[in-house]
Image (cartoon, rainbow, N blue to C red; front, side):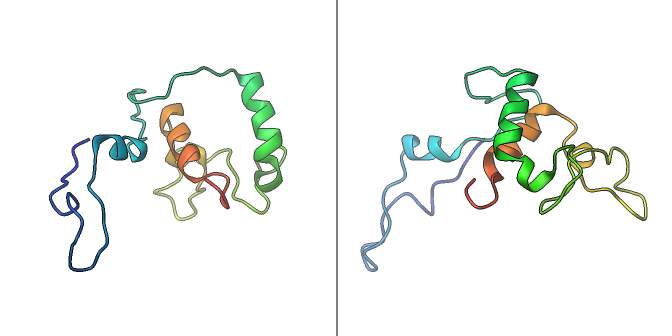
Length: 113
């Protein structure tokens, strides 16, 4: 990812706001994960471990069987986006585990990503 720092490189002395942008500062925001897994954080996981996380953190909004509730359904949707009634779910938008991981890390839980 390339980022132009030209507009953000120095504080504005007139307004007294801003700070220099450093590589360390940018690294904290550069958390995107590509479909090929590039930029995944170190670690590992299992289906059983993921199930425990889901039950603890996701079930309340997305349902015991991914059917939805307060939050949208997560199961299904593959190939439905171009239809008159698309099912906007994981299978519609995130066909790769890596991009799903990226989305969940950035946005969930809704009140505190």
